[in-house]
Each structure stands twice: as C-alpha cells, then as structure tokens.
Length: 174
Image 1 (cartoon, rainbow, N blue to C red):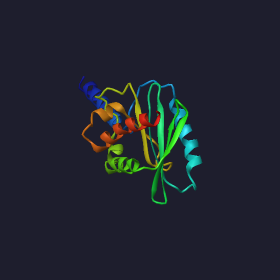
Image 2 (tube, rainbow, N blue to C red):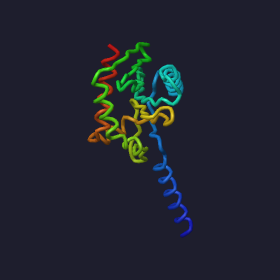
Image 3 (cartoon, rainbow, N blue to C red):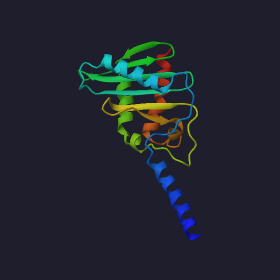
Image 4 (cartoon, rainbow, N blue to C red):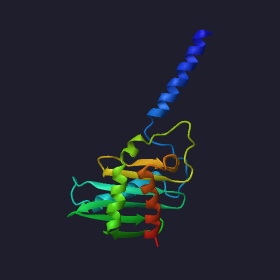
C-alpha cells in the first residue's frame, strides 16, 4: 500500500513538472482564421518584405474570433517601418511615424516576459484571443501568448504595451 501511495505521488509530480515545462500557453479560443493559415500568411508576407535572407524583422499580431491582424516591423536606414495587415478586411497600411518606435521600445524593454510566459496548470486557458510575438523572425519562431497570461501580469510593461497594440490595430482597420 505504501508503494502505491508513492507511485501516485510520483505521477502527480511528473504531471506538474511537465505542465511547467510546456513552453506555449494553451489557448482554446475559436477563430475564423485557423492558426496554420495565419502563420503561413505571415511567412509569405515576411518573405516579400525582407530584402535579404539575413534581415531581421519583428512580427507582432493577434488572432481572435473574427479578427486576425499583424504588423511586420523592419528597420531600414534607421527608420522603423511597420507593414500592418488586417486579414479580415484584406487591408494593409505602411506606417513610419514615431508611435512605432515608442511602442516597440516599450515591448522590447520587457521582452523577457515572452520567455517566462508559460502555461500555468492552475490558471484557466484563454477563450477569447491570443497574441503572436517574435522580435527576431524567422530565426525565433512566433510565440503565442494567451490573453489570460497577459491579464494575470497586467503590471508588466510588456502587457501594457501589448494591450495598446489592440488599439493600434483597431485604428489601422478604420
């Protein structure tokens, strides 16, 4: 009986360790834009924007029930250019104003949050939307960060700036 109790304890510990080692969050939201086509669209657009294969671009976007937008940000001649795409309306804009610099600096300042945003087995999964972020795309793949992870860390600068990106993307779609 003692061995059975130890076995149950070990199984529960292993399950907990595996959940903590999971790198991605588990986002259970439904979207009209499936994840695979969303990511392949980003890949094809990044391929068209990059001037050479060694150029580093930053990709920030979000996907929800009836929305899918992203921005590909490139630094050319010390000017930040954001190529913003709305997959629902099939519209895009190219921006080069100072808001991009301040927004990006705000995100990069707390970019360590991306590496610490893991799924928490005690936290509810996000059912509304998720963000996709990579500061060195395509060498660093896009990381999906669920809204529930952002909500649990609202005091972080990264969370605040990522939430501001929703307003940024909504403004672009007008």
